[in-house]
Image (cartoon, rainbow, N blue to C red; front, side):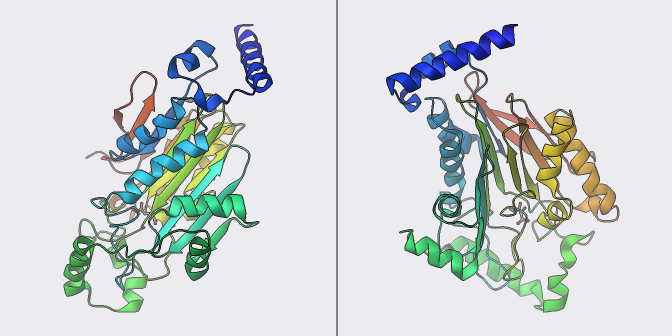
Length: 346
Ligand code: SD4
């Protein structure tokens, strides 16, 4: 009864907004609270998700749309030169090239992505253009760059002096041998901290947001694993792997060793588990366990984590390793950072 009353109230308010032509994006936070139409919330992976959430909240908190919010949020770490795993300043691949992967998706199945994109900082915005201005979902490599430049994005050098220095350091010991590197030996037990596949190399930002209109959206952007093979594409731009949103159920995103996420269609799996009745936390846990079961030998040395939000705005996460945290931002608290539970203990 209450739910029905709230629904009617929401419908009526929605109708008024349409009838008066008043853009919801101009509503004040107070006005949003007064509507009582449900939770407005954004959640992001990792501690740098706090800053990203705040940029998203500047939109969500004023009645804006979740798609605009996640794009604005994802642009924050993309532009942060101290962040070595997202956007400009990201560590390069084995050949010294910074290549970005990103995807964006709304509640109605619209999505866009770019893979192995060079020279453009805001891969997430290019992904959105792919979604909105092409009949395609995913553009890769030179074609993605060509499209971005046609769309007016600036061509830049994404390799900062700091990242270049780190790459030169890595080259000293890398002993460039394609076959061995292509199997990423460091995937397993002998992985030094911070190297590809190692449990410390996993800082993609994934964001999920629910707006005052009751619409979910998600975004995911990364420079991928440091020192990866040139041309390597991780899970982040793969719809259903690094990101998936279904307005009937919820959304999910991932961070960590992308190959393991792709193998398990990870984010799609999380959403489907929620569809079957699991909470976001339970769904993330089951998806992480699926990854572990498929790679029992290496699972204790790699990190994979999922973050999920259901259509009611409930948020949950789970990781293989301890150390994964996620940021949650809503009207009550804009700076929450929550440590996720994990399969393995410290
Ligand atoms: C990938 N999931 O490309 C990403 C890795 C990551 O920062 O999280 N990198 O596989």
